[in-house]
Length: 140
Image (tube, rainbow, N blue to C red; front, side, top):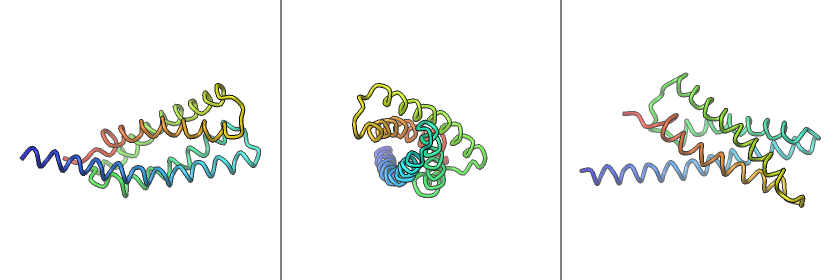
């Protein structure tokens, strides 16, 4: 019996990971699109990154709640608060990583894109683990 449960958990993890990647890809488009538009408007790079992160994050909350972690117990305001806390931490990690990469990368045509991708990778890894195990953990 334990073997069946383990298989179910693995399939659930795989389905969540696939959905998370798809939702994340869409949210990354929201984030990066906003980032580039804000940069093109002349906004300070770090403010542009912060605002684009907030837009992508807001989109991520609603899509992950609805599509990725559908077996999560609905904990109402506590769940939204946990998400907000996690993404507040991730916000500083993301913007900080982006700033660090811009400081250490050589100046070249794609430096902003490379810094953005690295910052997204770090933030995404943290988010999936904590969303799955804390914020949207499965109901018991």
